[in-house]
Each structure stands twice: as C-alpha cells, then as structure tokens.
Length: 496
Image 1 (cartoon, rainbow, N blue to C red):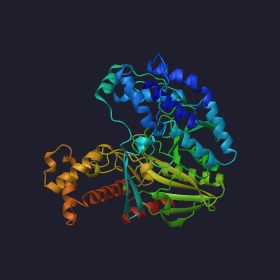
Image 2: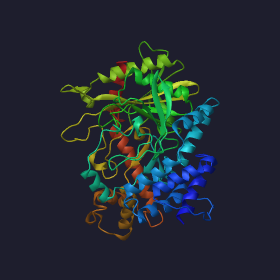
Image 3: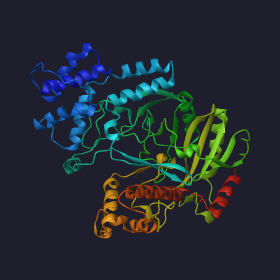
Image 4: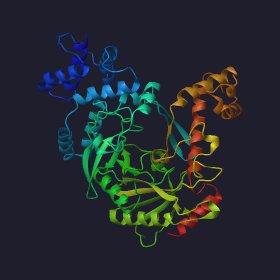
C-alpha cells in the first residue's frame, strides 16, 4: 500500500497547486528515495479527500516501521516536513505568484499566501485546531483565552539526543532567512516547506511569513533579512507604518526590546502581525492630550488594564515623530512613588510595546509603556504576573498578551480537567501533584460559586481563568488602574 500512499500525497499536491501534473514522475521518485522505497507498483488510490495530516500519517508510519527514522516525536516532525519539502514550490514560484496577486490587491495576495502555507503544512492547521479557546468578558472588553496544545511535547529520547549532540550556529536563530529549506536537526526544527516572501520596508530587505502555530487568524511574522537585534527606535516606527501602508488590512506590532517584557527572540529584529481584532484595539479612549511640537497628532490614553497611549494621524512622518518623542520621554522617565525607575546601576528598564494599524484611512499606533525592573520579592519582574497567578500564567507578557489574548501553557489542558474532577468528587487537590498548585484558587472558586455542579463546572473554571488573565494584565501595567496609578500616569503625560 505504500505506493498508493505516496500517490495520494502526489494527487493532493497536484490538486492544491503545489506541483504540476508534469512534475509527477520526478516527485514520485524523490518521495520513493526519501522513504527508501525501491520499486513502484500502480495501486488503486482512495481519493475520498482527507486532511494533509491524514495523508502524511501512513507515510510516517511506514518510515518508522521500516527503519527509515526512529519513532520519536522530533523525528516524525523532521520527516513529515522533509516529505512536504519535496512538493513545495521553489521560492521564485511563490514570490512570482504572490507578486501577481499583490498587483491586484494586498488582500488577495495574503489570502492566497496564507492558504498555500496551510496546504504546505507549514501552518499546521490540524494541530492548531487542538488548541483550547474561549473568551472572557472582563471589565476592559472581551479577552481571548488560548491553551496552546499545538506544539508537540518533547520525547525524552529526543531531549537526550539533543543534549548529547552539539548545536550549530547555522541558522543563527529560527527567524534567519537561512531557515528556508533547512532540514532541521535535534536542536532546530525542519523548514523545507518554508517560503518567506521578500518585502522592502523602510528601504531595507525584510520577509513575510506565517507562524507555524498561529495564535490568531493569519498570524504573520515580519523579519529583517539580517540577523540584527531588536531595537525600538525611530526607525522601528517607520518600519511599522511602512508595513501597514503596504498591507492596510493587517495590524503589525513590535515587542519591547528588553528582557522580561520583550519577545522570545530579541536577537533578531522582527514584528508580529495579522488579520485579527484584539480587545485592546476596540478599547475606548479616556483622556485626550497634546504632545508638544505634535499638536496636530491625536493623542489619548486608553481604558485598558495595561498603560496605553494611542496616537493617530493621517501624516505618517508626523506620527513617527510623535511616537519617537513619547519613546524618548519614557526611556528617561522615573517616578519612585509609582515604582518606576528608568535606570538602575547603568541598566535601562523602560521601553515600549508598539502596535500599528490603519483606522479609517489614518495611521494609528498604541504605545504600551513597559518596565522590566526586578526586586528581591519579585525576581521575575515587578511589572509581571504576581506569584499567586503563576499556577495559570508565569511566562513573560509579550505583544500578543498585551493586546488581550492569553497564550497559556499546554499543561493546563489536563490540569484544569483534574481541578474540575477534584472539586466535583471532593478530592484533596493539594495531595495531587497535578492540581496542588491550583488548590487555593480552586477553594476560592467553590466558595464563590455555590451553584457549581457537573454541568457548569468547566464553564465556571474557564471564566475564573479569564479573571486570572485580567489580573495578569493589571500586574503588567506600569501605572495601575487605581486613583494613585492614574495620577502617576497623568504626571508622565504632563512631561510630553
């Protein structure tokens, strides 16, 4: 049956425009070589559809059963990407087809590019569908909650192999252009089916691609062709606005450029964007104010758990100037009464998370003030989720969370079910390692919800997780939402 399974992948690739019918024999031979199949027999093929994951599954089983690969999670991922790389168009073909569509409409270009990224299984839609998602109606709008189950868990054998083998400096990181077509290894994922699209942004060469494990619709990554570190400065704002000018149906944002409050990869300049409306975007403005020298730029604070300034202008250059002025003022600003120190022992702490979009034909940018100072009591960050929330969210609060989407760890998928079962059966949560960290929180849930029963328990628990995320965002805000915090915010605004 292996020949029929190979043919099914070939037919899928022709049907979805990845290869042409004229390519079939060459592609067949390449797939046979990868699978160590040395003879071909025409076999009847079941063509009743099936997802790309279902088409790849028997090929991966064959490779494991016949000693082509060792049967571990990492090896299976490396191998299924190798097979998809064989049917992936060359960069010049993707660039050509994207460019043709972009000449008609930026939306047509990204619609096609996102679709083919899923067909190539670079965007792993089948795994993304396993993520758990719900919403929470907070005091600041509807927050999105996601438990990320799409990234595969590490197999102990893969961990051991990675520890025993030396990592290389090629590619330098997972955002470098050298990833396209890279076979991967125990330290680095395979990328044979990755085809970034080149862009010109602020006069430099950049690339657009999608995230393999998208957290929201058309979750894209925009990255510098050079391996240079993240920096938030005037040029960053020029780049953000240049991108949304080219793709006005997308938002794009820059993580902050300091540890704790920054992104996961600060060593390579990149942005994240996509086609999604986050709660922060629709959060109402509170107090309008003027920025000296930029009185023509609309400026206002935003009603959001974190500390946000919204700027808007039809003039891109003026908006760049206004954003840069706010950034410069914030970099140097201290307010000891609010716990904000710009520098300690020569180490800077203030920076900004920036999110740009088009709004009614105008350029708009939300500037989220960040500070990464730590203390003996809060070694993970003063403006970071407090320890009582770590059972739900301990990780850094980056761009996506800032906008109102919680990306929670995969462990919670099982832990929350165990919490529910323990509550309903009266089991001691503290005695079970899977639920011990949630014991105090769960007791409060039971106290606050006498109506809890088998039918509504999971819904109540999910709502309480949403309430924790709201507190996480409030903790990450440099100026708190109470009277003292908002007075401190106004003191900073006064310096502008």
